[in-house]
Length: 68
Image (cartoon, rainbow, N blue to C red):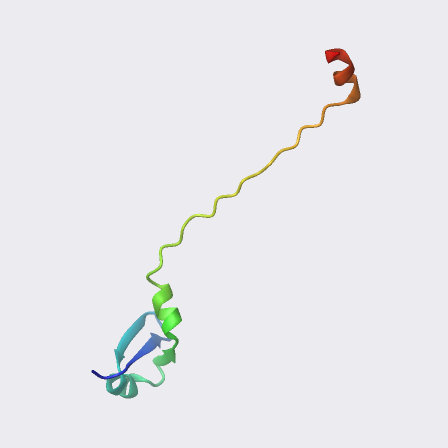
């Protein structure tokens, strides 16, 4: 099996994976070589980031005195 290369379309941003010979023929002004990591990144599902906010409540000295 031929080795594979990743190409990115400079106009649309699409990333494709093709054989070495196809990549050599396609590379030029519209297609540029890119990393395999970037190609893999387009398939990852981005999980939403969960932000947990901790709110500290301060009890004033007067409120403490009332409770006693």
